[in-house]
Image (cartoon, rainbow, N blue to C red; front, side):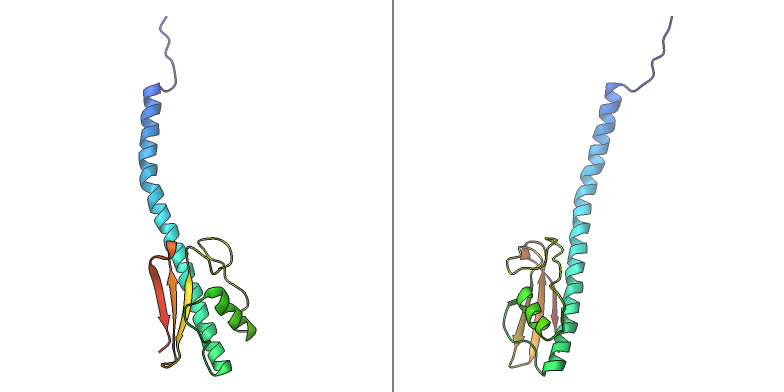
Length: 137
């Protein structure tokens, strides 16, 4: 009698697993880059919200918040006391509210009081690359 066996051979299964592994090795780095871009977009959105709040603060108080290289928690505390900003935003890199010690997604505020020009600077992953800079003119 001649029996026909159904199923896959070990070689067929191994070849399939290797192909899936190769496809995955291309997809994962690409997905990671997309995630970082989305996090950076979130930071840029926070930056624009801060700019609106700073302008509202200036309209109400006649001056911009003073200081140089002020971290986001300190700036938000200043804006909260005037009612311009309600709460500390979430850092997309950590998933927690911003802190002065954040290793990624840092936002800094500086005011050149002589020129009455402020600068908001945002950094990406690792705080090494500047992703956005906003100034009033």
